[in-house]
Length: 154
Image (tube, helix red, strand yellow):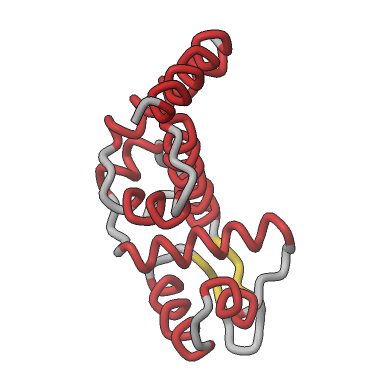
């Protein structure tokens, strides 16, 4: 995988399975908190067995997304770091969009369901809407009021 790529290229040429994406995103998240990522950290965060993590880490190592040597730390390659950053951005964009829609329950689960199937174009439209509401907070406030009043009337 190329060391340098755009978000658009990644979304269009993604060669990772949803499960692989989850691992890369989680390793990236852990790496943001702690430079030294261990197998047990990933297992704990994903609530899975360490043997499953080992198997997946070996696959991701072969794909050039991370570097791992037995009994050592997991280290994202430059491409792996960029992919992790991209995946977290995608996750956060969807999560924020669902918040704007007023979703309060199961928002994390809904985000997880959507993030592996969403197209780049849809994600970009969501991001634009989020940026719009950030810039025009009074319009966002009007939307929230409308949502509250609608919920009161149903």
